Image (cartoon, rainbow, N blue to C red; front, side, top):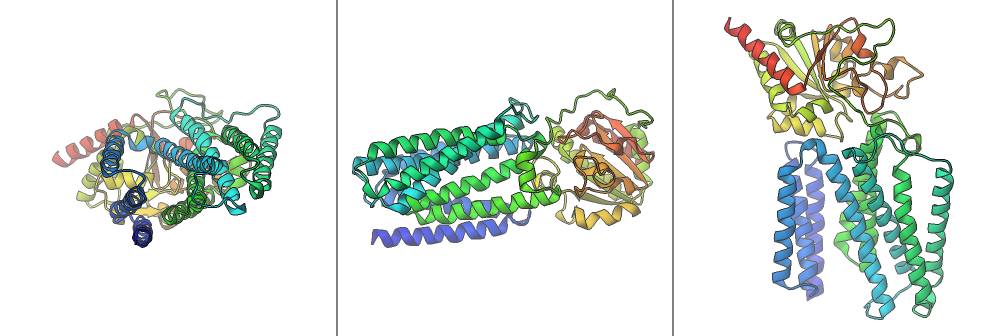
Length: 478
């Protein structure tokens, strides 16, 4: 009877996971999708802990309250700009949890307290769970450091790095081979099994670090997505270890979704996953407040002011707004919506151009603008908006950099050549709101800043947009 209840509970959880994931496809239904998926995991966890007599009701309730409290605190205190770092930490802890559960299962077999038999399948799944989970943990911690700045965003390498990485991979494969070879005589050779599992865990810990250190800041969002996929795979393999259907289903969904997202991001940058992992591309993306950086010989910068931008936008028929990471850092989404409302009140057509990798993670700009109640119908993906820049009177770039860099289209020698970009330079006029001329996370100088039809407004995005809006209001009242 208890087994049947658990199976039905896991089936309900799987249905909630699938419907929840389906509803995250649209910003309109994403919130309910998250609620459904979270509810599915809560049901699965509580059912497992209670029906299998792992914890009592008071302990389960205490865990829900403490964990839920931490979740609420993070949701209210972590800025959207720091969300990739938080996702990296979640990935890491998910991978570590999977590795620890598999390690615990192994120890129970060694102690003779496990209820299942220890055969070839169990040995393989435990080994894979330890390997993938530990790599995910250490790699995610490094990714968090690169995104948050306590580790430089520049690629970190040293002589012999690749050789050491290959040596660690061979060692990990050898440890897995030993675990498989002694599984048939278990527990006679339990000491050998413990040694092999320990070597595998330590090797995987180093592997995760060495795999992520050489990757530059420009590619870190892709790495976070890949590690998310790894965390799902680790959970799925752990599900096979402990025969938990909910873990197998949820882990497989996360693994598949994370890999699909990784491929989409690589396509958006016109690069392969191998190139991302081995390319050592990009840096920290420092964007200091100074506009007095080196200007290439023969290039000039045309500066503008909020008042001039207000005049330019008020007399336009069509304005396309291009949000980027600078908008997110300044938390200027509400000011941008207010500016758009003022322009639309005067009959100006306003659209938003969203690049797939604008910001620090896919959907970053969509979420920020939705938070400011910008209608989803006004948000246009790259392939839908690019043809409209030629008919736009004005393109306002707010904190975007690499995703509007013409070098990706024009300079075959550029590291970002071939990357699909928003063709803002084709608009009649372009205003770029940015604190300086510094390059983005790719480290590639942006020729857009020196275009004949481009004007630079050096300022914090929030302050600049608020000033533009105020100037538009004064023009209307005059």
